[in-house]
Length: 192
Image (cartoon, rainbow, N blue to C red; front, side, top):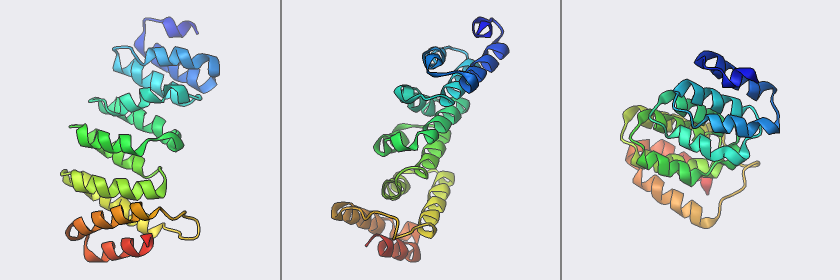
């Protein structure tokens, strides 16, 4: 623990990650405090250490990090949220995608769509395709949509309610030119 209060940034960062690896619930608050530091290395290390513990009460810190203009902090936000996929708010991710000017944030948000509920994932990917203009992000969204189609398993998936099916069908109609007729037909068949 002496390393935690050291003046040496590298030692402190290493100690924070180590605390996450070997620490317990009593260390979550200590790590959360270090996410407020000005030094990016310290913030990243605190987030990484926190993500190794049960950090549900500090999930907000990972949403904040995901939206950072610093790519390294966004990575840690992404990694932490990915570990708690069942707690991710898909609407909040879509809102981030709309509001963030940073391409790296959009990239990580789109990657988080892959770990959420399959029906929310489809809705989010289609919404993202409608709003994103960056060609690299659009390529990633389309790749995830193709993966969604190829990994679809009707026997395991709970069917969405009629309203969601209607909403997705409308989005598919709007995106028909963008996605291609073949992909739209596959998706419409799978969600019926």
